[in-house]
Structures are given as C-alpha cells and as structure tokens.
Length: 200
Image (cartoon, rainbow, N blue to C red):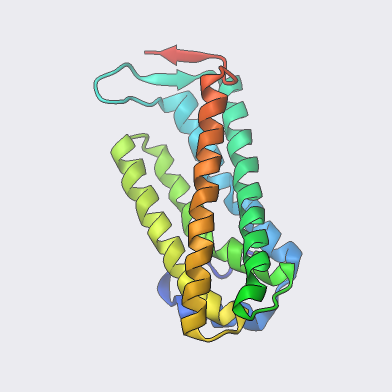
C-alpha cells in the first residue's frame, strides 16, 4: 500500500526494510510514493514563498509572485523526482561491484524509501526561517543516510560489511547529485528565470 511504510521507517527501520523487501512492491508503487511525497516540499515552498515570504538577517521580507512561485514549485517537484530516479540508477549501476544484482524496481524501492525523510522535512518550509530550514534539512539528510546504511544490506541481500562500503559509495554520489541540483537552482535564480520578486 502506498505510503504505508513511512511510520515504520521512523519507528523501527530495520524491521520495516525487511517488510519492504518481503512485500516486493511494483515499480509503480515506489514511483507513486515519490510522486505523492514530492508534493510536500514543493507545495510548502510555494506557500511560504508567495504568501509568507523569506527574510535573511535584517533584510526585507522577500516574496514571489504566484506565477514565479508556481515556476519554482514545479521546478523543485520535477527535480526531486528526477533526483530519486538518478539515485536509483546509481544504486543499480554500483550494485555489480559489491556483488548485488538488483532490478531497477528494487533499486527504486531503496532510493524512494531512503529519500522519505528529505521529503517530510519539506513541511518545515511553512516556517520560512533559514535556521529552521538548515537544522531540519541536516536532520533529514542524516536520517536518510542512516536509512540507506540500514537498508542496503537488507534490500541488496549482501553482508553488512559489504553493504557499509556500498552505502558509503552511494552516499558520496548522492551528495554530489544534491550539489548539482542546488547549483542548478542557483543558476535558474541568478539568470532571472523567476521573474517577479516583491520586497516588503
């Protein structure tokens, strides 16, 4: 069932990974999980950027027009989904090196459920304070890494010591991917592809 594993990933992750592995969900189920959860950060960012505004230090409160906010939210939504696909591709590509032979569906399951904390952190965007977003983002990232380390041996059916090295390689590649996505957003913003900014 879609979204049924979220609570378990927070309360008893190893047991939940066993359940996810045993259930053998379809590719569509993992994709639907990502499609639904990606709305959380995208819609939260849209609401805070358009209706609340962001303020850095003692500067003015900055808001976006609804059109600009929609462009930002759509770009974020697509980037999040593409990021999970890229992570799944990395997981599958690296698998042979560590003695695992997952299907892309299996790799997608691991990528989708590992990314769950990063999606859930999106709710914090409704309180648009830089310190809050930074702390929540770091917490979400740390827990996502923990989920990856606990999930790789179970989902890839390899020993824990080999799984640790495998997960470390995926984490390194995932962080590079995250930097690329953030840099892409910075390029979009600095090139005025989000045209209307309102200062209060």
